[in-house]
Image (cartoon, rainbow, N blue to C red; front, side, top):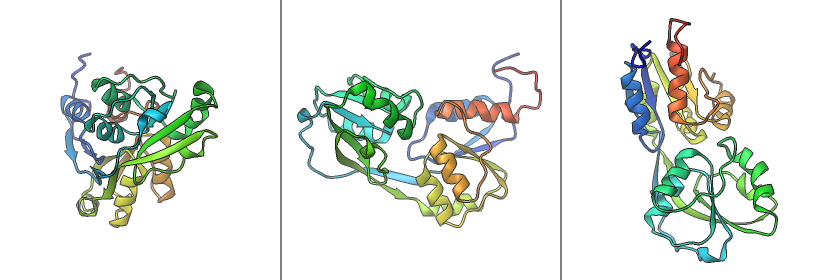
Length: 239
């Protein structure tokens, strides 16, 4: 059966992250759905002194946003690089950096289990992060310094707009986006939710919601595939 079958016809899918995922948006439209971009968080590069990166053995990035901010500063380094997620690694590699480690699951809690054994104990690491990053990376039994490279703020106005809309599938890609939605008074009635990552899934559940779609691989394209499977009426259609 044609790959372009309208599996998402009649569906409206909302992307809420700080960066518009153009490839996933195009995929929704190819499958006959309507894609809306309504970011619930926004980021900006923090004006701070660049640390002496040459003293570190590893640079650690847990988001494409931190990777993009780092690349914009054109920092030269010989350190090895660890990245959580395909898009994070892709951003770095597009700017000429080599990524030496990616965890088997794109999540910080899996990263801290796998990275120490890979890197060894006698290494000095720099965690390049945003203001709302959790302490997960710093909890590793390694020498880890932190560089807050970007600011994250909640877009409550957009959250108010979203909470008034119904019959949607809303994709949450971070606990911060969930926080913005709930702070605006958004509830879970009249919408279906998709979560990228089990940390985001837990945030939705802890705020009284239910997760209808969560892909095994934590990417936007995979979550669109999961939504398409769930929205397809013909069980015999294969992906």
